[in-house]
Length: 199
Image (cartoon, rainbow, N blue to C red; front, side, top):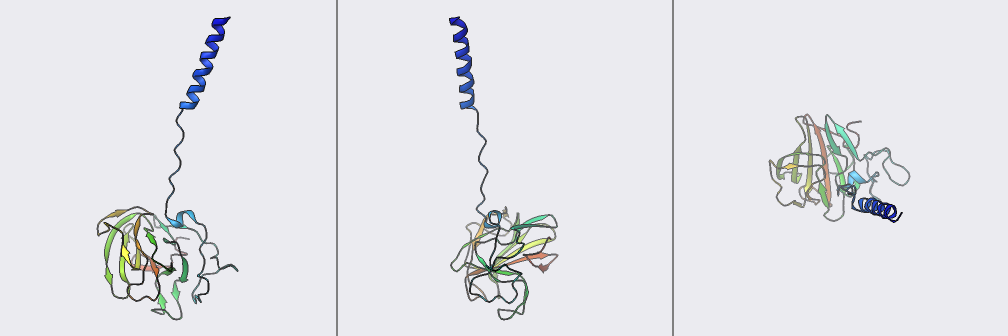
């Protein structure tokens, strides 16, 4: 009887030890990229955005999707933490009547993340755009980031980046009047609206 109790006690202890020692599932990796975790983007409060997409009463862009797939490339629609200060297409004011991207206002220099995985095609200063990054995601799709205040350490032409990697900081270099990111999605060299492309 005592032997049976001892065997049962040992078996129970082994089972409990097994539960305690069992490996736990690793916690999922949390991306620091804003568009992967947020489900809303707003128009900047107090700014008249002549080419704004449709919004709710509180300024939130209707049907905003954080990411999209464009010809096989998964891209963020807004790769910074900010608000929309200018939409895509015809606009009043600004540096051109036809706006080839979207402007995302951050007030002070903020982190810019790679909109998608790819290879850095250029890191340079361009007239109008100021400090600029161009990333090639595949043979047909690229993203452009302009008006930067600084580039991320080690960023240069030919470097591979993953979606969500830090690539630079918002600024007002080039033809800009406030700290923001000018963000373009290019398909076959032509600008497409980052808020709607891929739908």
